[in-house]
Image 1 (cartoon, rainbow, N blue to C red):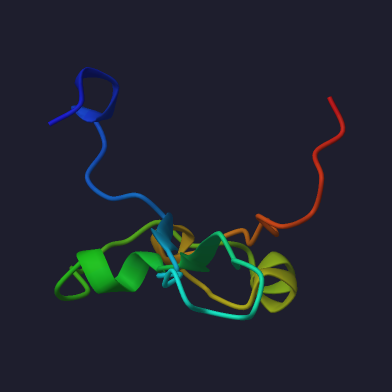
Image 2: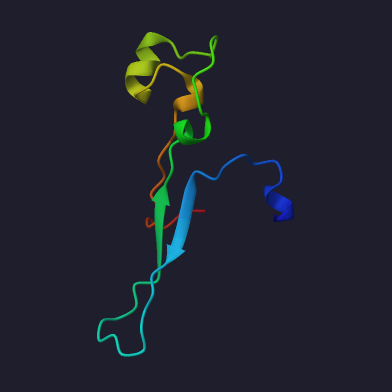
Length: 80
């Protein structure tokens, strides 16, 4: 396990390298990314989870804070 990832229980964005054969006429695609939602790692919904206000929950798409997952497009260039 990587030293920097020891405290993480999961990574919300995963990646994989698309296979490109030596005789493939198409240009290589490179790395593809996909997002995994937090509910995949919870197992079950325990009682007493912290909740958003109802107005905020409508904006976020979930009532429970632990299930909220902000999507950041991995293909969009970052502005630093």
